[in-house]
Image 1: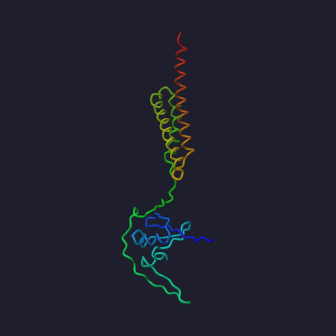
Image 2: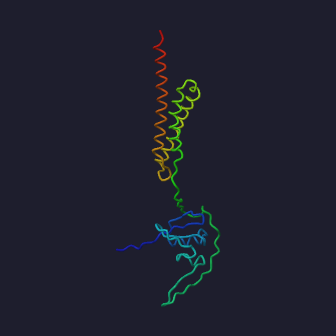
Image 3: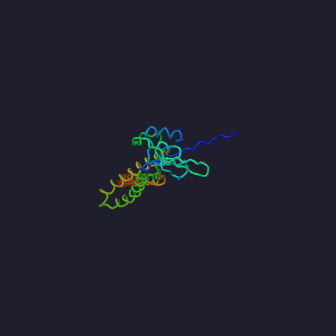
Length: 199
């Protein structure tokens, strides 16, 4: 038993937004509702063969395109009057395919940057004259790296098609934790040293 394949189409507006999928009957309904107008382009899903909407055979008669028919060896092109459709808004279309934007990784990048800065600034803070400034700054960078890295890691796991930078996020969190541990061990060392040095 053979099944009839119904092609699905995508619609692209003048701004490059892509909508669909829709079959031929849905295309005609959208034209009647003013959601598809001349100037848009239509292609079968999975291909890049975009055709101007008024020339697409499924809706050409509704948008004032050309309807082609063959009579013997003669090809007859019949011009069809255009339907007065209003300009559609992007909210009117029933389904929407987001353009393929590059995934974002800004939070992960900043997490890694602040994570790298945290131990570097902390080492500068070991200099006595710089400690009062660089020690708090190092702690702030470490906390920032942990927070940003945790958020970036969560976003990458929940929406991998929109966010990247998992490795950068993990690097920032690890460096931030390492810096805080380094501060904590330093505090413990100074406490022990001060206690044992007393007579």
